Length: 156
Image (tube, rainbow, N blue to C red; front, top):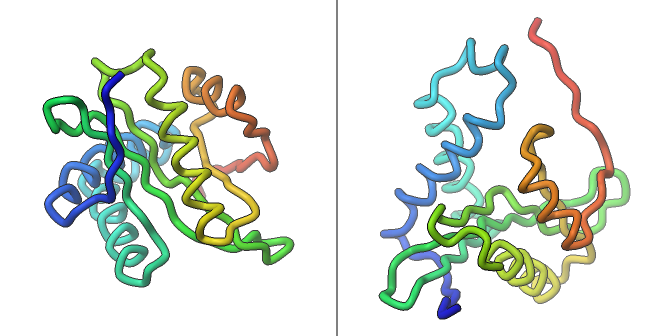
């Protein structure tokens, strides 16, 4: 599969925010969707991405197909483990275009995130995935990710 990775550029951000916001919206439980709009979620995602990139705590990696088209991305941030303080990479979003799914691109993007996290001095890599996103959970489990915590919530 002819795909190359490159660092995201300013002109990529709009598409990456749109994709990440869509993923975030679909990951929200129904009660949260009832109290927020997709536009609010998109605005929050855009603000978070801008802050991480501005502060040097985030990195966008774009996967380009043979014609230079954007076929996927991984949005990586740097955080600290809240229990140990260890430097930790965090995957905020991983996306593969529908036509490119099932070809191993998700595994390659995960491997790239792992490589970059190591380069940045991280000793851990984490992510959040919706409980009902079985295909993504399988991908992450095959790549060696394990459940560390369960986040539970309710509307007040």
